Every structure is written in C-alpha cells, then in structure tokens.
Image (cartoon, rainbow, N blue to C red):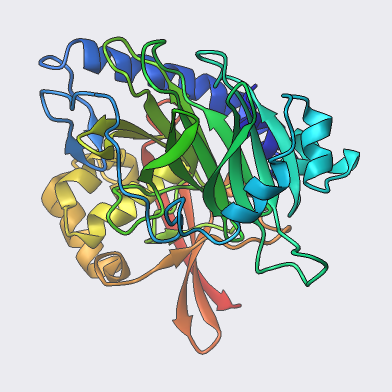
Length: 401
C-alpha cells in the first residue's frame, strides 16, 4: 500500500473501501493502458464525451516558472534561514540533520511529517545518482525572536559534501509526498499531495529534482490546471510504456451536483465512486478518461441528470419500460408524457438530496426534494438486478421534514 493510501486509511478509517478501490483502480489502469496501446480502436467515455482517437503523448515535464506561492530560491523567506541552520551538517545522518533544525526524535518519521505542523522524514525513490533527500516542515526562529509566519515545506538534498535546501510551499498539516515512477535517465519527479476541506480533496503539486534543486513542474491547485479532485479521495501514479511522465489517477467520492449525497459515505453507504486518469500533455496533466462505479445511485444520478437536460431517450434507456410505466405496450412517447405530466420536477431546475439519517435504510435508495414550508417529497425507487440496475419503479410521497 502506498504512503498516500496509508495516510487516507488513517485519516478516514476507510480501509475496507480502499481495498475495493484498489481493485477497481487496477482494472481502470488496464483499460487506460489498452486505449493508449491501441488509440485508434479505443473508445471510452470521459465526462460523457469520447476520448480522442489519438491519446495525448506523455513527454518529459519541461522546466516551469515557480508559482507566486512557491517563489524563487533567491527571494523565498525562510530559505536562507534553513540553509544557515544546516550549513554545518557534513554527513547524511538523519539525526544530525534533525538536531541542526531543532527537531526532536518525535518529530522525525512518516507519521510526524504527514500529520503534524512540524516534522521531517526521509524520501525514498530520489536516489538516482546517489541522491539522498529529506522533506521538512519547518519554521525558523531567529536569535530567540518569535517564529516567523506559518511553517514552510522544504526539500533537503545531500550533495555529497552538505545539504542543499529548496523551498516548496507553505506547509499543511494534511499532506503527503510521493516520488513518481520514471526512467533512470531522466530527472526524478515527486508530488506533494495536499488534502483540503472537510472532505479532504487531494490536490497534487509536481516538482522536479535536478542538480539537487527542486523546481515546480505543475500545480494542480492553479486556476489554469485542468484538474478536479474528489472528496475522500486518493491519487496514484502509474508508469506506462513509452512515456517519461506517469499516468496520474485520482479517485474518490463523486460530486454529481443534481443529486447531493451526504458529506461522508460512511454515514449512509450511499453514493458512487469516480476515477479519472490524467496524461501529461505539453506542460501539465490533462484529463483523459473518467469512469464511475456502476451501482444504483449512479443510475439514479444519470436518470436525474439526463431528464434535467430533457434527454428523454437516454432516460428511457435507464428504465425497464414495461415495469416502470406499468403497461404491456411501453413507448418513448408515453414515457415523455408521464414525466411531463406526473414528474415535472425532474425536468425543472431542481436539486435532489439523499438524507444522512440513521433510520433511513441505505438499501432503500430513498432521495428527497425540498418543496418549501418544511415539506419534502420522498422518492422510493426500485431496480432490476445487477449488473443493469434498470429503474423498475418510482414512488413519491409527501411529508414534513
């Protein structure tokens, strides 16, 4: 299990679902590799659109300018202070480095680094050419004066004679650092993955280590980045044939918008997962393919979403026509008429919800619509068996919330 997955398991106590996710990601990766290997024949849907017949080429990440938050080495506050603190350390010994930075034994190691404000840990996988590296969350205190600002994240690289520090970004309590798989003859890449918000959405920031200096290659937090993370999610990097930059796969709880699920699936067992593969193109990662868990909640979401767009034909394909319409002679026109006359809220601009209440059976797949004045519509769908999960019925009742 990767460090990122380990951190997510601790952070969410979500290990049993991570086992299922790992299996799904493995299958997803096989599908992505198949499309990359045979791009002309591969057809897959990403957010409802076909993947281009020619997959974006993955090439080595070019040098990029450092973003404003990361600054440049010459003008980054705190960089001179940490370089001064480690100047006297002339060996790659971890404890000697920790002592120079004023870190205790409890502040050294993966757990201290991942889940605290201050900490340091050794980074494995950057040893190409004999490089030793440390990631440090550190805050300088100059000559007894109060510590300056918020802690910052640095990478320390052993040159053979001393340590060289690179400023990465402002430090955060919840982050992990992962080395990307790559080729031996290329400068190593590593990712700092930051978890934001109550749903711990992961955001990757990619750096390159070259000549013992770390420089920014791509920032998933940037407005210009074509990246969208998922709540309670994780990120994996998988090496593919013919590319210097690995495929990035992010997965987690889908946020469908028109059907709002509780903040945490642990509360109800409701919702569905999404996984998106990103390929490197030109100067950053771009989305290539997205897949969703095919379960009853996903069918519900698709049904609501396509009716919102007045796409009756697609919605009709998601039902068992005879059972849903309660007739032996179902037609698309009859379905359209029933929706327009009996279920107009589904073609209106309405947001449906799944309530997080212990008394609600998650296997019932109820969802609601708030109608105002403390009143709600409660919907009770029924489905055919796996794997199609076609809607066989939908009943509506009204009650006070």
